[in-house]
Image 1 (cartoon, rainbow, N blue to C red):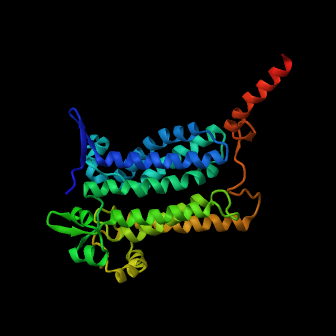
Image 2: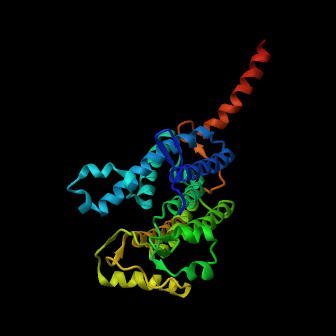
Length: 323
């Protein structure tokens, strides 16, 4: 088993989980800054967005989890703030981050969809790397599997197989499934945003569709899913959609209350993402492509940062002429 503590600063332990999540956020920030430069957006814009988005994501992730586990917290509401004891949800984090981003971009005078498109690869990069924090902590794993499934079917290296041995049993490395799926998703988004036919908002929609498809199937073997009691027909429908995974040797879906929240939400997000693209294209109207210049509504010109960089040179030339 890997030591979840990387090192200590005096009495303060520094966990690998935090280092890994921070690394994912940093790499995502660098990707956004690099793409933003193509549109003349200054790096400080994305740094400010990250500083606002991360706390909002943490709050959203916690509130989402608590909402579906209210029986656990209603008698001890002070436990709600104890995030360090576990209990966050990725979809809640996305909701929190998106709300913060909508407010932030509008106050800065930008279209949310244009900024969301730039940040979509950053989001999936952060999730791709962040899942390795779950690996170190031996959490967010799937159900019990045979050691031979990990070694002979998946051909995983020893360090992963050994870490999946928890209290005498081996488990599905769902962190790895999602990390690999997100890596493929990152490559897809990087390809998609360079296509001339892509319109504003569609890269972001592509992110949600891609991530949600993977999450739907991976969630079926998770043992820590948020669940609720729903109609039997819906539970049957979700099981039938998931059933092709049996051919990969994943076995049956994990038992529990019949509806998994993340599975249902993933399905709805895939439908919503497809509907978003199709309906907007059918309705026509003003067409803004991903590759079009990004205009700052407050200045009425292309990104103020680009203009700011050109203004000093112009002023210098004018001053030289006057003198």
